[in-house]
Length: 283
Image (cartoon, rainbow, N blue to C red; front, top):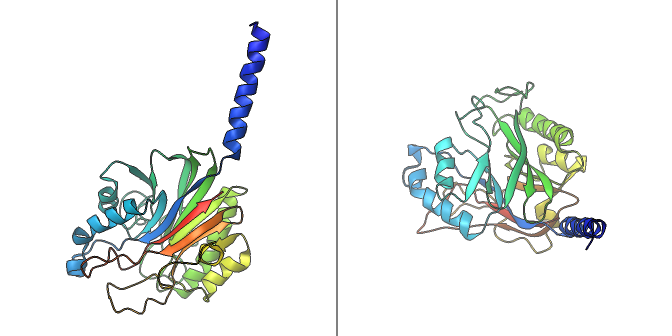
């Protein structure tokens, strides 16, 4: 076989491989999970008693990639201890490891990090600080650009935790979030997870819905949503569990095959005071 024919065959093989990869769908489980910070005030619901439940839940339900809220650095390390996951994100207090994280945790064998960053929900988003009428805490968004090694698809993932007290802070956080998504991820599929401390009828959520860039996965799930409507339990088995404040949002090029609020409980104890919200996506 002469060199010219060999080169043509190699070109055709490469083209066919690239075409097959481009046409392959990405499909995996995504979740938002406020894991509740580690505090001894929680007594028998403290992290030391819950961490095995959290680890078991994450792996049993096969989370491919998920955003956590309220996690201190040592809690993240506890989730990573098996070596199958890694994370991106920084502490909200110093942009390093101090304070709670809104980290993104992902399966190392499945996903590759191509880019990453953070911004704070404030008038000065590039530096740690409180925004608008927030009085308690710095609030942060961590984001990353990922490549799905299985399909070759690239996408962006944003993970947030809105303020629980400042009404104007929550409102402005939605405007800032949408602005940043367009600046950072324009044209790519986007997944957003988070504890928004806001119900669907409230202004912060309505701002996102009316913007039109993102869909609420609860509303577009191909299967009927599973589990309670509410995503918060307060470590109380008798909680009404009606308020939906944790979300997974996706751009219009992402299909939500199923949506569930995972109401796991063991021996009368929850893995967290929030339920994880899990969806299966395809794009």
